[in-house]
Length: 93
Image 1 (cartoon, rainbow, N blue to C red):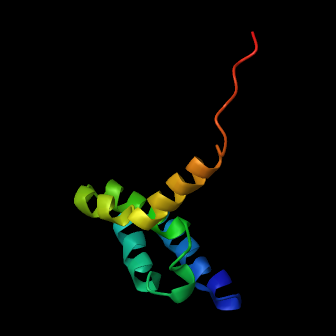
Image 2 (tube, rainbow, N blue to C red; image 1 turned 180 degrees about the vertical axis):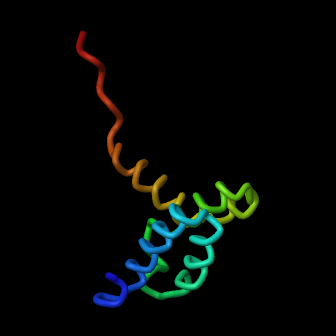
């Protein structure tokens, strides 16, 4: 098992996805909740996505909305806004 050979929080997150596929989102969510406090996962962009997906599949919609963290959304919005640093020019027809 990869977690025994090369243990890491990201390997555990991937394991949680595999467990959820085999045994359901509740089983995967339980594993995610154990590794979510790892410092190396705090800025990992897939953690809130995976956790939110499991919560959604469990119909825990209020928690799902909270897990789609505002810092991640605002970073994406900021990145998108900065990708258009100048106004687009007229279209050539």
